[in-house]
Length: 143
Image 1 (cartoon, one colour):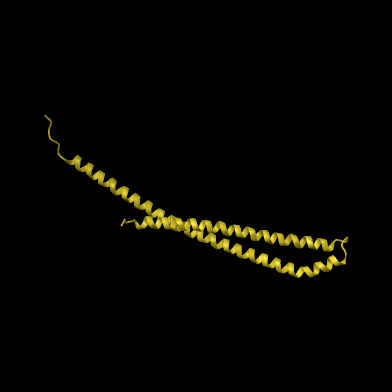
Image 2: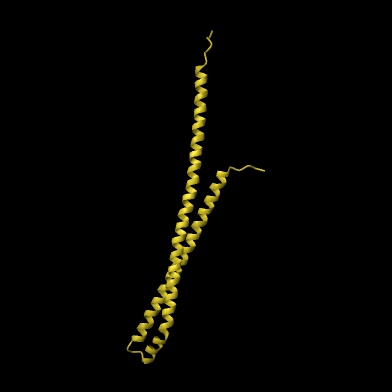
């Protein structure tokens, strides 16, 4: 069995969690955009229908049809608006999750950097101690 450095395993896990959080945010942003478009389409349809109903060239039937349709249109508009608000809230949560995942990944990376710096410093001290020891040895006379 191969022994693995637990901190390196943690780094990979944190990176994978951050990548997943990025994908989740992208999906939530796409859902929010689609919901925003549905709200816009519902608003545009209500305006078109109102314009048709208030057009003097249309008969009374257009006004009556608009009045009958309006309650359904308002429910559809409210549903679209509710979907958008939920999607916007999901984006906020996904952004927070990404921020937390990013911070966790950075913490592990910073720890590994500090660990590597400490190892480099220890190696440099050992090298210097070896050089100091060699320099302190008496030298034999030549010749």
